[in-house]
Image (cartoon, rainbow, N blue to C red; front, side, top):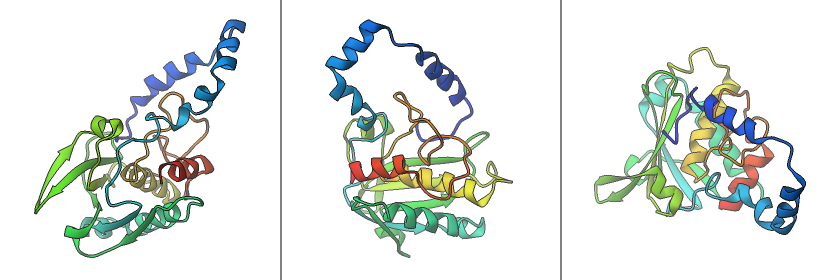
Length: 214
């Protein structure tokens, strides 16, 4: 559930909005005393996972035939190009044709109502893969392979820019980034914020977090 776009996020966003109240003077004193830790809060596990793909910062990605069949080859290429171009980041992605060697695998399938994309994490042992829980990755467990599934049915009617955002969001998860709507949330629309946004490339905030990770 951590790596899915769901409309139920509206409830958590409402809770976030309730936090945006006027800060009492006493609270301002606390913020002054602990300004350093507060300013760095958005670089915590809420937005950047501690665990990493052990193959990084270079990542080979493979596309299942379902990606081409559903017309998502270009959005994956766009995501790979844009994430690789982030300044001050060593992360780099390139496509290969051998699935057994890939660190990121991309599929298009069916995820159920309201779910636009999903990323899961795995460790490779010979020819078999063992799933690693998202909570473990967040806390610091490493992994070998990220498996991305995009749901073309739920994105039916979306613009190219919106599909680029969704694809870039899931690849961002594979690179170790989390959701930007998680408190302390980033304002505005970003690739790593859940939802349907018209963004063909990551924002400066997205890029800043990737550079911090890699």
